[in-house]
Length: 246
Image (cartoon, one colour):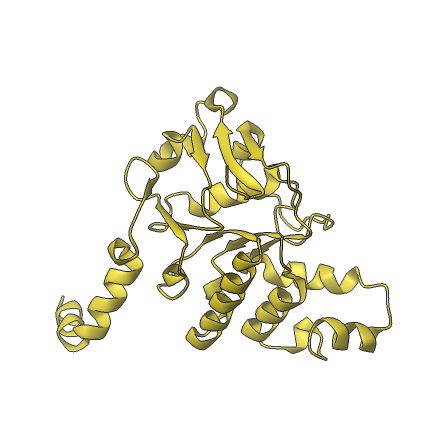
């Protein structure tokens, strides 16, 4: 048995309404169980295949606030999570994470606001100790996102990330990749949704694709993110000419 905090999951589809949109997502509707065998698992696939829906359900089943934050965060600006979490049972290790965090790009502003609302120390000392001397709202989106990661991610932790590349330049994505790799070596577990060919290239990560009718392992070079990016870089002029003529 591996040392992941979340070893796997099971889904009881009898607890999901027949008219639920979840049944219209092919890879999801055929998923009844899943094992996490690597310290880093990346969920990949086209928009609308259910990647973020699956990650959000895992997060809620694990006790996180649907909009993100640590498991101590309790707030809601818009209740949008699906019923999948209520039909999901997580298979957990005997180990308990030292710290946990759910970070999603689309609701990061709300999480950053709550992080500042929850502070209980002197304002200036808080910012210098946690986020490099600035309020998260006084930094760029990418700077504040990375500052949140570096302030909250620790060894032996559990971290769920939903499209973190949305806030980050390619260079900052490399910084995040190094953070994830370093922490995975220190017995942390990551489950992330990403389209980034940089993050998908993390050594030792298991890539699971939701394209098609079943969730399946996929090689890095077979992902659409890699193939489209490579094709654009290597054949940019011809590709653009063809697309623009159409």
